[in-house]
Image (cartoon, rainbow, N blue to C red; front, side):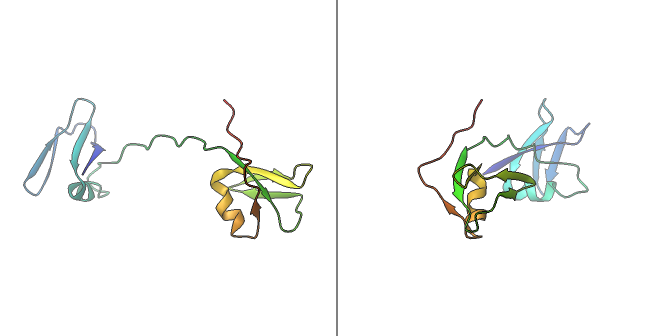
Length: 113
């Protein structure tokens, strides 16, 4: 496999052992996974490009074991709906379940655009 790295400004090539890599016009270089480890050393200046943003997988409905009026996850507070359930990000459900919450299945709520 290979990895694309962003080269430091002004760099035209990179070498690791006997492998020589040419920096392309966009300022990136594609190297083997093994050589990427060597080039990602803080002293080289090579970095991984930013990962693309993760799309929002939607929301899910969960129920608190304690009838809490509000809960929080990742710095965001969520308030109970009239039926005592909470609408939270799908990515948070496992964390809440580990604290005794139950998911109300069949109620995934897709993100609005």
